[in-house]
Image (cartoon, rainbow, N blue to C red; front, top):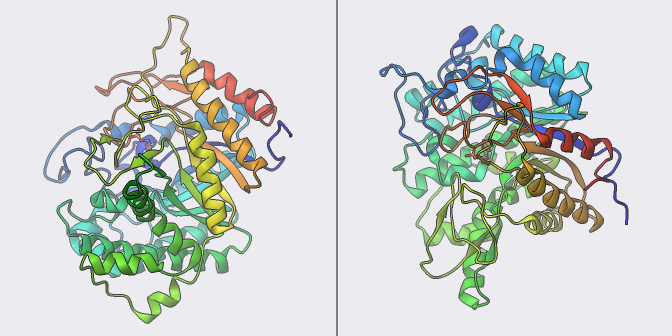
Length: 462
Ligand code: BG6
């Protein structure tokens, strides 16, 4: 067995615009749903036009201005790929304009050009947990079919602009999370009914398929994928009812992959919709559009969970409530650690879809301590990532086609769930605390050198 990862495997990290860029109103950017969630996904929705507050994400780690320094650090680690998102509201501040905001487009030109200097491939998520807030206010978010048109217009605009610079695209981040946190995903109120949420998701799936078609025709040498939160569940016990409940729990997220990779609603959803009295409006054209499928599957993986038919206590992930596995330990944020789960998930997805896979998020959020000599001895992060990457290598040996790995938050960023800096994922420490105080100076952690050696040796040091 080879200890090395494939030669063309892409190595890097992943961030999201609203968690790093800051500059939340710079150069004509409009307010987004993320700006309306200043305390994170779980927090209160705040009307930013009405209420004058200062939120940590407004400045974040100021990647908008400091990206050259950060990209140089990523290059020093040997990155061949950086996943980031475009903030839709930088390009179309209200979401429904015909003409894009040139200053917003220019920012991403500068960013992609900077990456090109170091041969770092950008992988771009078109919507990472945010959309222009105006689309919620004026149209009711994705519950309105018009959103399909606005989104595809946005996609077409950025495909045209960056066709020579970006060859990896993703449509919606963790699309399956729209079910659990509709405001973040489809821009619906949290009190929405299941039917309203699934209708909005349907519009999003159609928009995703039309975007895939656009990408295929406009940038034939690019690859476009979906993005799932790989919420893999194991049966809590071998009791048949638990096994069946787990089967259904996995369907709840695999459904998105099934539509995006196979081009149609799976049969089990028809039963689910019937049982839940959900009647979707789905045109013949929608069904036709959905046939355009993705080139690869991308997913985030942080932890596995358990499925049970009983009312077991649940613990909170960043969006999901999960039944914990009694055989696993958890991080200090309560996320269970299961490296073998990533091998299981890679095999499961590959057997199901026979499409290449890309791990676009994985990492450990922890409370780091900056030492007197300005570093962080984050052996816990190294252990977590080492153990997961060993399992990725095993999956490749199992025959799974894995295109690359971008760790979550290669530089400390504002956490999505609670908008906190103290939940750090990076190889690079950023001097900023939860009270929005700090110099924003960057420091290399111990894991910085470790990841560099992993990339340099193509995984031989694992
Ligand atoms: C993923 C999201 O769900 O998890 C990221 O795509 C997020 O945006 C990451 O940051 C980790 O979650 P958190 O809440 O620890 O930031």
